[in-house]
Length: 411
Image (cartoon, rainbow, N blue to C red):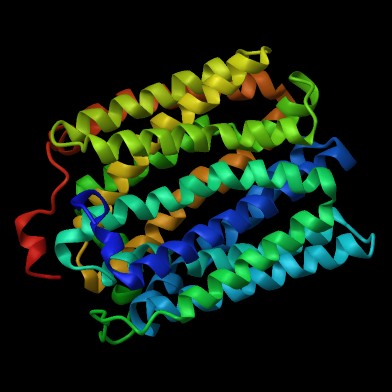
């Protein structure tokens, strides 16, 4: 394979990529199907906020142990076990749908368990990729790892909308089957080499990820930029409201809205793959986040279906640029001995930006309405990009997506 697809020369990475894609696809189908069913049955946007909140809180509460588990127990093992727990949650929701006992409160309990599994899955999954390829292919592997999730965010909502138009049971059973396939793929990978942490379990060991992130300003700035931009500017949680009440679309239309950001993300990833970011990476990061916020505000104000879809495509494209740059910087600037714990910290930031962002959007929409919530959040995200460009000049001055010289000796 050419250098643009160097990571896929390695069979273990191929299986990892497939497992990560199937897991993301299953999660997309499950979450969008549950969100749509809950909103149609209750018309309560606050419940959409609770779906995000109960997935975030376990990651926050378990942050001191999830990363350490990845560093000590083995990232493949932790990732596989987490997927099995996710399979159980999908199977339980399927059982409720089949027996006509769908209860939003029980679903929230299951999503709390699902959130615990995701808390262990996230740092193990993010850290495993670079253990499966040679050092020279790290950046390529990190980029395609991010692409696996974004690709699923296209296919997942589109398939989810189609399956749900058939029946909720079909959507939930498909999600459960994909989780099972992902578990098989992960456990088929031979145990990879990993610089296992052998320090005594002291408070300093548990806090090692936080300590590293705080000291490394490029990493701190990159992940906190995503935290506040998506926390304030995320609109995905309110797509059921926009589809049903503002744009007057059915579940298939909702699937199109959910797929649109993923379409933009994958198209942008294709551009990045063909034309790699070779300079001014930091400036590109800040500009892409600002444009993410502005297009979010434009979507929030729109009542025209085609324009709303276009804005969602652009939201996904600009978000993909920032995701790619942040992911590459995070993995290349982090020594392997603390990578699990650093990725656990990163998962908290991501959870706060995504799940907690969904909670913020749902609760605010219940009080102020969806339009004010999305438009105001998008403008705030653009302001965050401008502020972070001033607060973190180290990122703004970052030119190439390469590891610092002192990291090479540690891998």
